[in-house]
Length: 284
Image 1: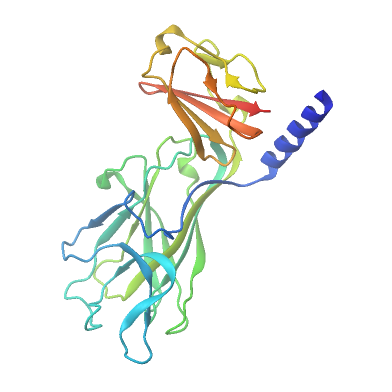
Image 2: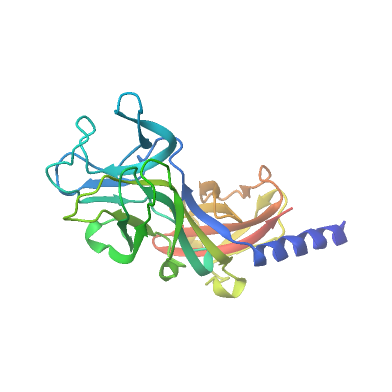
């Protein structure tokens, strides 16, 4: 049994060392962007919103929905198909993304296109560690390419956002080009991946503040916390090896059960009033 466990741990650690880790993604398949902040900064009533990519009905010439769920913004009147009187200045801010468990290169990938009947269009990518729109700085300008007129031409565009690795809250924003008429920008999917997880030596953990008494863990996490953190203001969050939150709870004197979690490699994040510690553990 012990040999089998060691073999499992070796395989898991080898896989983790060579894998890329998805920190966050959104494909808009649920047509829900309620966790985004969508700003109509020019105040003309036209903004980013979720819909199907636009297509034209060959029989009527009307704009209809295509087959791809997108976050889009448009500079046309859908009824007349003419340009809006003013050019767009719209800003789409992502929800908070936790990159604190990751190291190496962080990459943002967009699967996007200029809408049909458009030409190449520049999309501005911004980043910040605050949701305040005034704090965002330009990371990159992506030229979304189009070679045909009426066909979908979604492509992957990748931006290095490694400056945000290790941050507990990262916000990515997209801005449209100003003072230029366009037909539309359509984003099918957004993802952020990391090259590697933080190693044990990278994680600033003071054992006198917090440690796990047993590791690997089978039934529950037996935590040893400094006295000042032994209260319900201390938040416990468990993430799987892909960075997905799988369990959370305020601190309680009784141990935190992990019996419902499948075997694998996990992070425990312990935070209280701005102090945050991270521990790796194995659920067997």
